[in-house]
Picture 1 (cartoon, rainbow, N blue to C red):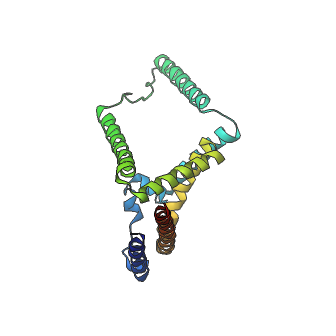
Picture 2 (cartoon, rainbow, N blue to C red):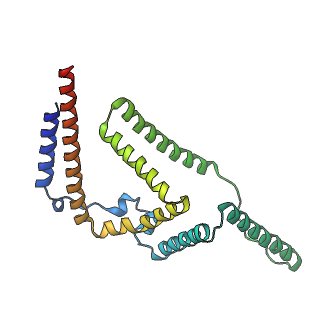
Amino acid sequence: MASAAARNLDRSISDSSQSPPSGRSRRSVHRALGSGAVADVLLWRNPTATASVAGAATVFWILFELAGYSLLSLVANSLLLLVTILFFWGKSASLLNRPLPPLPKLEVSEELVGKVSDEARKWINHALSIARDIAIGRDRTVFFKVILVLWTASYIGGLFSFFTFVYIGVVLSLTIPAVYEKFQDPIDEKFCLAHSLLLKHFDNALSRTLRQSNKEKKIL
């Protein structure tokens, strides 16, 4: 059984190595990211917005990590400043016959709540589907991917604080998609090669484990 799986894996690896990545159609990174404003920011199609996001993330990281400012203090002070400005603006407007502050109608629409709940339901169902594949479907590929992601998150969480982790995520989000879009072909080639070698080593280790367990069963 293990040898048959190894032969199938070697055949798939040889087939993938014979068809170079350059022969495949080039994927659109902008389309994969949604082809909207978020994609424009991540791929530096809108340099002003991208620079604003990077600058804001840097300012927040400096406030929270270097200056020791807390999130609760920042929110409270920001709201205090906003309420004070709006109060004196409204008072001066009534005394000087000036227009009132142009505040929008502050309410959460039913449509927005529906969209947020639909997106949350999709993510929750996707997570439950992965959990079912691991528990019932016994998909070893999904299992090891989840283990790798969770272990990586746990390891990184021990190295950085939460705000540093978020800041690193923002910086990587603003760099990796743009770099991948520019150097997509060589990155795909190296990734396919690394993926094939990783699968080959993993299947060899699994084959050795199965052979060892079969030998132990025969001895018993």
